[in-house]
Amino acid sequence: MTNANLSTWELFLAEIDRNIKPKKKEISDQLSFLEDKIKKVCKSCENNQKDVFFIEKRLEAIITVRYNASYEQAINEYLHPHVDFKQANIRAELFHFGTIFEGLIEIFLLILYCDKKITEKDLKDFLKESPKELEFLKSVEKFSIRECRLTKQKKTPFTFVQSIKLLKQWNNIKNSNDTGLSEILKSIDELRKERNKIHIDNMIKIKKICSMKNIISQIRKQYNDFIKKIKEV
Image (cartoon, rainbow, N blue to C red; front, side, top):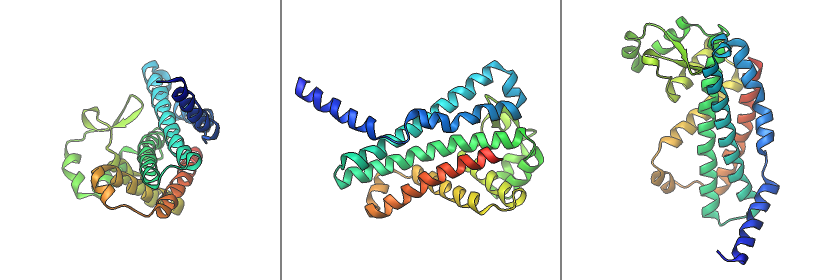
């Protein structure tokens, strides 16, 4: 790489770093309450050094992916790439948010369970609402906490779709059907479905760039709203 190219690359990185928002420290500060909240309500996580390690690592991973989403946003808003690249960057940002929400939902369920706002009986009752889960429930004796995650039989964590269903049921039955949370969970489920599609199929069904910008703006807002819901619970 020539000095001229290196200089251009350094300018590119400097422009991104200058304009990226939220920055990594801002993301870390926003999510810093989660570790204390988990330790406060979940004594098994607080007293087990191995579990403390997993809390820290999982939060660190969520912070990193959120920062990756910020990077995609900064490229689009400050470097003004071609529309095809803009669409690809927005899709990448949406996929990042799908991963972020998956991690946050796991934490939300853990806090609810440890704080006895959702019980083992509730979990089984909620799962019974879905015919697909009935066979699975026959083999479940109890739920447990492993590596600071709520797990099923054989110590496997809930899948993303199961976690979404559980929170929807909890919200409807035990949380007075909070409309704000209902909308957030609906969007999270759409992100999950989008993330599971084959990438080439997504590219065939291209949305207009203005529509995609509206979607990602809503998702960014709902991310902040979801964090507030976890903080308030």
